[in-house]
Image (cartoon, one colour):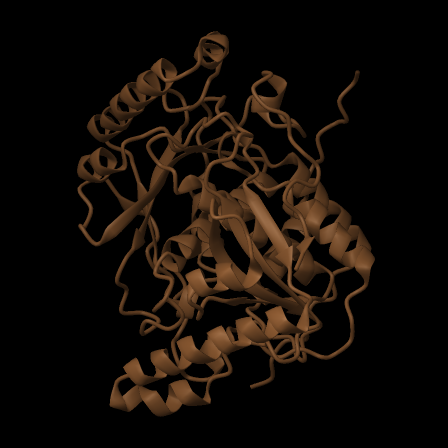
Length: 215
Length: 215
């Protein structure tokens, strides 16, 4: 069996890849148009190419479609977001209240991501001292999906303002799964090369923060 | 100030992106050739484009260059790997012992990644109920670097078979930093579209594991 020849990624591809990284956004404002099923299928397939500790592939994607379960996630977010607002300092509360932090009301596709905490696959390799590498593998799967989605013109938004225990219970998943996040997917209303939190004045992105201290 | 027009990613780019995802590997076998500084600078810059909770950019990359610190990481790995080997079932121990699980002896560039557990940047947004989203953000930064490295022909290997407390102590970093992983970077000896753990018979990759259960 001959392996295919390795691809030779050229400067033009790298420039486009850098554009993809620059124009990937956390999206909270979606159009209502549906996402074709073929695109979703492609995204799940590509996500499974992500790195995983011991080749354990611990990611568990759960499409949330039932109106009752979507309502439970919205209520969970509303409670957690109200608590976060009440924690804000007086000088930031008004700005926080103006931010749109999720697209739960309008995103056509919504899914949760869990990570199996004790997968048989992988035979435990690589995670004995660092079991959190399972969750990290699942994060790389959704990050893979995120980039592939943006390359299709789709936007993804990560909703982390949630009580993870309540989210697990609302979605009725096995107790061995860890909740990673809830995600909104769809066609973004706009495209931008700067984060919405920066455009809204919440925080500024730094070019080289935390990079390459030498030891 | 006019924003640049959004890029229009086409089918040819997506096909190349899918190739990149398919040919990204966890690399443990490196050539000795150095990595040009300009490439490293480009990788740190691109990593800073990763998504981060509340735009907190909590990743802290530490280049490990001193022979003493590299030796401490190698010793840490040797101990953790010996313990992992002794945990193997009788039928898998011989195979485990044959695996090459890190490129610490030969990789020209080695760095650790930490995640600041209480960053001022981001003002706490998005992580009140899920502080682990900081570590997840740092994981997406190194995954960004991983893909950008592969597009340059470079390989990255994630070393997780380490005692994280000893790794922190060996690298003398602030106590508020969480250890995410240690990484080897350099020119890979070979290119492959299947994981080394699969080629060595440790585990099989599944095409669509954990994908799109519906609730």
